[in-house]
Length: 627
View 1 (cartoon, helix red, strand yellow):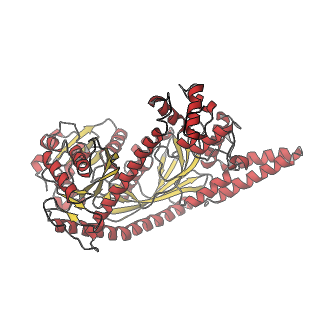
View 2 (cartoon, helix red, strand yellow):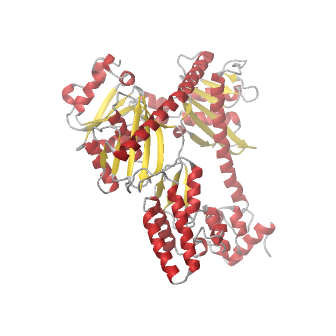
View 3 (cartoon, one colour):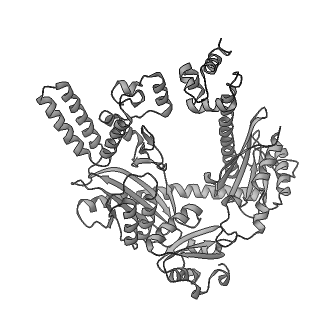
């Protein structure tokens, strides 16, 4: 355990008010964030006999070197601050939510003048309204295909929309009445947004109201002998009913509720969520929670609720949330959710009837989620541990390299040279720590490029390692050195990296190279490479790291090269400067759209007059100046 007198503050200095606290490691990094109604009581519980602590809590306290806290006014404020800090610092010992798959959502980008409906895999973009998650992408696509007959909203991508607007003709969906064709002005912006909002209202559970209204309109049309219109209404009613019937009936009434069930073991918990709207299951998801301390089912539910309803853009929070166990902080959670919903929210444990029956189903699904995760994780965790240990033994390291960083250079004949730096922690990619570099050294070859990236990556490491953080100041995550630095290349690149590390004053980071030809491992001072067995898990992990760095570098280079080539097409147009060329590319989006533009459309760009527009048009179509 850590030196307790250095870690444990004097009991009298810890306040008894509600608050949020943070444990820091020896480097000043936040490793755990928690909240408490009584800070003194809660923090004192960490400094009891280590044998009485949860195994992961023991490890956290042993790793910690300091603790600080912030006093807040209410439990709701504590809940909000705790979540904000967890999101900001991503502490390694806090509860981890692991989805075993990405779920599809139905998304409406309401920030766009003409919102489109799309099936997406993540619900994170602000200004977008999401429905789901759904179990299968194919099912929601079939539902959308039916509903577009009733709510003909835009579903095309931005490029297709712009192209249709330029040529003045809608795409196929506009001709078969599955789109109201706002691209050609068939409906106004306000009319199209009204259709979108109706679509959202239907998905929110107001399906029966739309069906009743359409039945009334169908009856009026038939009574007035407008049979074609009545037939269209009949087809729309059928589409709505088919879309509604795809969702399983959960309750006999039109209840809107979310159900959250938990199945757990001492180290992990499976969580299952059902989203019920209008009495039917509209979405569901399952994920696994890794516990950092001893948590009762109600505490796991509280953490899951905080995460679920903090995601931006998610559909409206229902008035009722059904849970499988009592939640200790239920009143604080209800108050927090009420602010998000702008209305009351109630947490309840169902005791009988159809709600209890659905909760039993959710509990069975939660148990299945946990069991599936255990079977899959045991294999993955074992394999990753073996790989890291093999790398440690092969390289003679004191510790297994839990954090591995890899650098790859991408260039084409020395032009648009870029580099990627990817990060793996515990054998898994940590994409939030990925970095990309544009090489600044003129005419740099691979070795000079590698040296530049290493210098820039570790430029501040020595200074930051020597300087203690100021009170309240957090270290940048990326400032912490890896356990192993991998270079995509042979010994020349490795020596360049080693020299750059020494120049930066970094002497504790081992560096190796992985050459593609024979997958040899090169060390800076060895004349011969190290050959790992082809079946080695350690070699496979190094290959994964190297291949991820290569993929990232290639993608960055293609993107940068594409921008450069797009600009060069306009370089030879007389009288067209760089600013106007950029304005053209920004206006039309792509070279293909620019080539398709007429002279009149080119003049629509600021600064482009009739003569210049004619020259641009001629250059793009004949390769020479228009006469």
